[in-house]
Length: 542
Image (cartoon, rainbow, N blue to C red; front, side, top):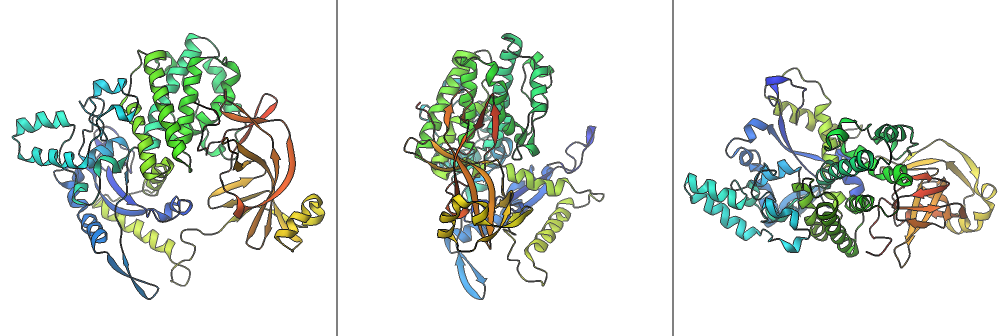
């Protein structure tokens, strides 16, 4: 990471390498907070890239994690002694950082074998669309290869290093960690900064320059005038530069902007594209893949559907639609995502989005003294974390991981008078009639605002029961959502559920919500639409 904006020969002069860690047994809603991401190690990139530089930087971590995984570490917690055990579960990095840390080939575009999960050659990745078609790497064979490289002559080492796709032995081999599966594929870098921009550059070039369905000026105008919901308004996509269509190169957006773009793109251009357009159908497959990979829920059915979608998407992209387009290494990495989900759970919990946000703590500060910069950064960060973990009296803060719910402005009201049709059901929940009414509330980092959609449940066909939030009722520490249930139908052309009118009113305790993700509601023609971005199953058969 660069902490300054260097020019010319000063590029990479102050570049630093940072390792963070989070505790996997902390619930995800708390683990996503930046304050729960801890600093593990920090050093100058030039020092880390020297021979055994990463091993020296991580030596204390390796010793500690080996101790925790075998005999445990004794800790005093609230006056009681406990033995704490632990191990490294996954290591999430971008592609270059993962390959550097694992000592795989970093130049993935030119390496003979550019995947750290399998042994497929670069020339063959465009023909392999499911994981069972490739020979997976194993930890045992990987260790044998690393041992062999150490005993070879320099010329032989250069040859076999190329054949095996590894540069040497990783420091992670010194701990109980499977480097062939634990260096996970990051959905943010693989999809939002890799496959999705590549796909959009191809399909939009086809729509704009070949089929003349619409112009780039029209698309940018629609993106600018689109009424984004409160969920998306802080991550609006940037206008698409016309030069990207003239040269058909990858469209540039930040990861959050790209995620918003694929959420709203079907609504914006869906009415311009014929329902039977194969290019659009394949783009929708990729969007569905992204929805699965960024969802906080998953099941075994999700794994199966994801594997089928990826195989179908890759085959159509290379064999049917864009045979002359490049088949990038990140497109190959997609085939390993289903097994990664099966082994480690929802892929959203593996991405680097929050770690990128943590980098902002260092990048947003101004530095004038660059002598022993890593020590300065580490000291300031740990001082900040100590402040965050302490209360006003110097003790441990009870609100370190979660401060409180944020309640919007509102008013007190008699619930029975305000909602007489719900008073009977409410009185079965609470006997206090005077409540606080508000239009918005933020709970565990998720903001619920009037007009957002909620998934109440799924039927036997995995169709969601949707409801639209009207207002939030506060009684003490308890929150209740007054909602309107809706009868919706799935529109596969825009990957969204559509509905015209709201049905009966209901009141739902927040604690009873099985699926707590708020969803955006947009207009598509004369209908309301909801894209279930936190889905775990396909609403239609494959």
